[in-house]
Image 1 (cartoon, one colour):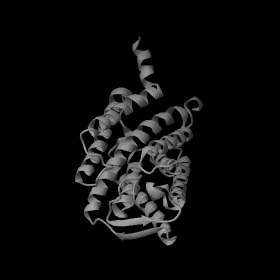
Image 2: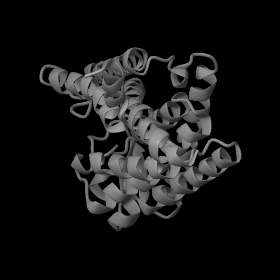
Image 3: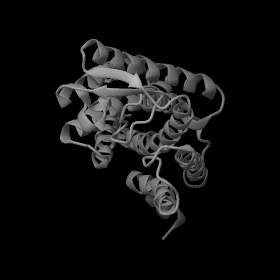
Image 4: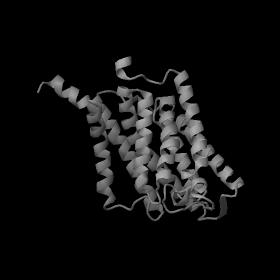
Length: 281
């Protein structure tokens, strides 16, 4: 096998996705056997494990980009990273707060006494770690590599569908919750990456949504055990309340996030950030 032929094989999109994702997935699977799961009983240990997984995922991805793609990971550039994370965090927190406000006004959500300030620290750690891990896998690896070959629209649709399917194995998941995650989170997070062409905006947005939902309002995040500053309970039909999966499976969350995602991708298109398939460039 010639060196040039071998390199073409390595850079083939499906091969690149596997090579980039496999070490990260293996790291999580192996360490999960001895470390407490972030989705189990909430506490400092869960927060630290989540953060460790997230940071390790970023480092493994950076190593893959340097060794296999032989380039600098501009999507992880440090210049402006804090501002982009901050903007994403503000957007994510605002979107969930809006969702919660609508559910409260509709009499679907009810807020009571929660677990106190300690839950904010634990919730933030778990949320940031999960955002780092999932955004590295779904946006930096899957979305980016598919987009490079098939274009933005196909990559958005496929990555959103995959994100929904991966959450189909969460506690309390249903067909509705799977579709909801794909339509709201899958679309808006891919749109955030296309908008900024970097990973920091979707990381901030993802972390803020989960933190506000779980750490602040004490609602179930993707079916995990509620643990937050206050405690939120939901009543009414699952289509509105989200059922056991949590309020992110609510049609209200879908409409709020999907609207924001469409707005982001529209701006990304005006900026010229929407890519055509490789054979049309």
